[in-house]
Length: 456
Image (cartoon, rainbow, N blue to C red; front, top):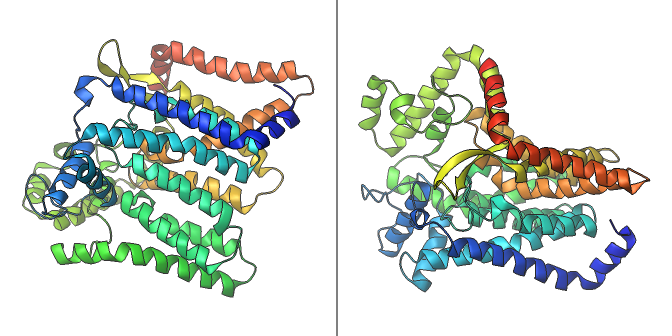
């Protein structure tokens, strides 16, 4: 690597030009994927089809309804369908190409945002490497189990909002002890939660971080109160709407029961199940089919809790498997040759994961500050949610850019750890090389993993 001081000076003098070039490169890659998307993926399916139908029904004046039954629903969070509806309103109904291009632009902005996060957390060199890395990071470009900008999935909006919120926390909310900043932070988190309800419980952890970051309990309580009040301002209109249409208290969505039982049933093996016929007995399925949406949600929660109580001895083993699935180094990838999805070693993520371990070790060693706690809290929170529900690599998708920041720090840590730089290059190359070998021999490596999995 060139002299670090020279790199830092170059970045400082050409920051905007460098970021613009990275943005253009990221945009070109993402647009090229959209233009070459296989025909079978041009139309939405599964969750993407639901979002598409919600948006269509919103523009038709029906509101947020189940497209099949025509009844009002609260199964998904509302903001991504509203986002799609706005695009359809501007560019034409079911204009998927317009959605994809807009999402490509949003995704190309992520490396720019992550540059400023890396710079705020560590330095501009870490920020620049993180930006370059994310611009060419395949899971954020092309089809995988998590999707990408070419697919109508809520992650495309959520990821941008999440990183902007993270940047605001690092630059303002954790720096200036301002009630105004905590109010803005609460608004941002309310928007995040209404985009994907997966972070619904995270504000409790963030309240703890705010408390730890203040010198007096009184000032901390005041800031936390403002933070939660702002979240309530954003979420309560949706909660009130849910009560009006269901005549029942539904804070966010009615998907919690499905999420809970998908990871807690007799067939679960770490990942979540989706077949209701497998998760329920014939008698339970018969009862389930006669219920309304809210009753189904409560029923599934009860069945899942009963299963956990009756099979409590299996919980430790199930937790290990769920966590393994969350941090899985394999991915269901699209094979351009066979035209099908195959299990393949996720070399992109695995390299990030290995280098991030060095970055975490470096970050926590000198001073375990509030920013490091903030980063690690998302990893811990998501792991806890997965243990309660079910494992899915998709759950970690939103924080992988934060892992890239830590991985970038890890690379500089290895580089600076050797006086003779040939050893640093060798160590970095060895980690990349090992992952490439695993990728090339994915089938054999996957076979070994499956043998170990069966032993659990």
